[in-house]
Image (cartoon, rainbow, N blue to C red; front, side, top):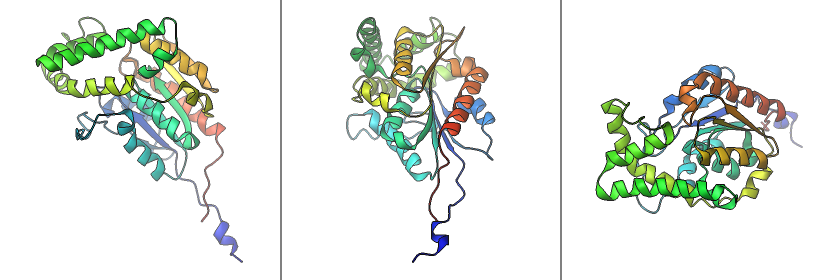
Length: 278
């Protein structure tokens, strides 16, 4: 007969928060959120995705897929003995969404700002078809710049689409150089997002709070995606930040961080404490 200590419950580890940045961005975009989640109550991780300044370089061994980006994230989830909260913006939002679908039983909350889950658009019907064409056209323009060697022109098209006309011209030269360097990975991101295979029904089984945020000035494709995800998730909630664009986590960082922190708290209230046998 096992002694009673065999079944004693260990003290749960602090919840893990994984925050994923946008395409062409860096983990630094989440510093305001980090400030709201103290080390005493949460373990906060903001990894650099492939191609970012703080991230690894894609090997090129095969065609890049979204699952390749999520693999290290799943490793973090599997290694943590406790609840996990996922946060993501744009491309990082799509990565977080895929990770949540693959580990739905481990997720305590999901907070996304304009996730670029472009694979959803052809399956949504109506105006989403035009939005999908808009994204494919953008991706094709970036690809054409790569093929011709016009990396700066491709980066300008990419930046101005997500930030508004003239945004590229307003960037410092060193920032422009870094964004032009990122363009080859940006096209891999587009390709992976458009060809992602997760079904819409997968999101109906999310049994945790799902917060979808978007800026009132953001582009139509991500608006449609955010609203549809909020409808699909049983605990989905949709919030529009007035005056914000696609880069809301940067331009409206305090408001976005506050919303995410509240969603994390909601997830912890809904989820029973994670317990393990000693």
